[in-house]
Length: 346
Image (cartoon, rainbow, N blue to C red):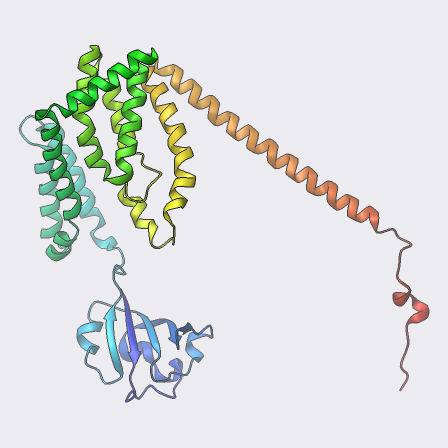
């Protein structure tokens, strides 16, 4: 794990280089970096002379903090969050727990739910100290769970208050008015789910749109699978907002993005995703058509990329050739001619 330490005024490390202080053998920790006055020192770590207030980034074991927290050499000792390395010694136990979960669910799916099998796998990992109980509790995303629970309530309210029926009927009327039929319903469900996922979580958007999609399907007497597939794809493909999916929020801060970055790059992706999703779902029975079209598109992109690369390379070589032709062999400046070279004789 990584630990951050600050050298105190009373430390006997002051005035010594890292090598002279025998830091690694004395504290059982390796110095990865040294920061001074807000800047990282780029010198070789072993040659850095330590001063009061220097911030050391250490690679340590689990016993460093309890042992040296009150040491007079350090003003502050704190662990850097989420810096604990993976425990590969427990890898096979964790793998067996996951395989056991899948095997249990496959063999007893009539008696056991996937949730119960997952709880069993999590309990095995806690018992074998793969994950601590405290970390297991902190890994639960209560915000997502509360949002989903509230969405269930809103979904039920929309059904009971006939809001879902009204919106579903509006979608059906729009599809009939435009003469698009089932394809119009698919586009409308995708677009509505996408717009909802911009402002709320994708799970909540799917739950809110589910009764509306079901009502629209029942009004037209269609098979439910295509529309529900489109609903699932739309709820899981929120590219145009940082709030639509958890991974979008994960990179929002560290990447220093702004909301418009998601709009500029996400909206075109969302548009093509909507078109391809509706086309693929609409031809579910002729699945080989979507496979062939997808393969053709991939091949086309590769060929175009290769041609653009060759054209760029040819253009660069042509420019280099023109530059070489501009410099003729006889064009030598008079300053560099042998007649102007002065020799100094001692």
